[in-house]
Image 1 (cartoon, helix red, strand yellow):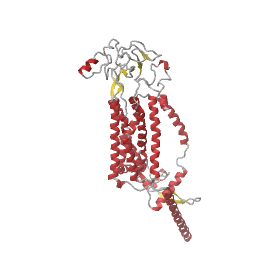
Image 2: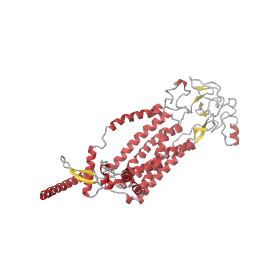
Image 3: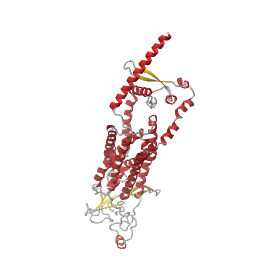
Image 4: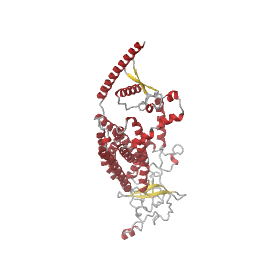
Length: 515
């Protein structure tokens, strides 16, 4: 949807299309209506808010289940949960720290024991006590938890692997549409449509696939980590897709001499290095300005193409023909051109490279394996920390992933484009360089390949190191099957009910004796 709006100019509501002196989105000065998609997405998000607001704070079924599980674990002496981590409302947010009173209240209908959270400290009853005391009870355990989580070697190695992999995925996905525009001369709307049509389905399928594999085969923590390494290995094998690129047509006067320039023979005979110079003998009488970049392309009858900085530097003496969309009688253009004598057309030269299809064929499975890595790694993270610290560990993990990976990723990949720049736009007033107008495709492809391979190798080394040196910290216990879990819950519930019945009978007998 967003790609379709890029075909319209960003000022289409204020300026008529006839007054916009640009033909289409292939013009380097074209700015598409990128903001329309955000408005539509914002409106849809606001509509979805109202059903969410109607939901209760805690679902009744979820509350009943968590209370039953909390009671069962307390009866067995293997309590790993606290009321707060289960999402249960209690009279105090610090009930877990202070040791809440668990009271057995059997359900009259289902005869299933539940749990009532009582007050454990008199100071907390009815919200008594100073505010600073409540805040202190809430935050005093945070430094200890942070220290314990950050000291876990397996946790840190897996988190660093996710951060490095996230850096590569975020950077590539952010700039991939621009990469297609520069490498394969694809229109912005088409590039965004191709990337969105491939990345979104492959990301969803990969995420569901990896989660299904872990759940279906009950993979242990070590086996899940091996599965993650295999996914990373397959994505690494597809990284050479960046070697599929197209060389751009060299710009006359910057990368190659003018074809009708008298100094060409001098360079050929003396084998001297070409010095970039837009002004030449063929356009010296045109008085051209280097700050106005309007690329044009000359299509020769032999199939070759020559790109020029602007119609002025191409030496075009005739005005622009709106019907044929061409300039004619250009003195810097060879005579053997199509569509007339020494003619050029607006915009970049059309790419004759057929590498786009091959690149997309490799890019689709790359997205599949790259996005499939997230769910298994999170399941490993959850089994490397204590149960009560799982949510806190996930929060710290995503902070580190964003600081190390997703936040610097656009800066790093943007730097790759800057390094690959050959010519920049120059402001006519301040004479300062601005956005890039011409990139070197080969250098850009090599940088993407180098950083992609290096990042995935680092992530793989971190995961392999975790598997080899810190496997003892991994809880290598398979996920319980549904049948076993139900059987254990039923058994625990029956034992709890019998214990409660005996306790009630003992209480009633004691009361009778006292009377």
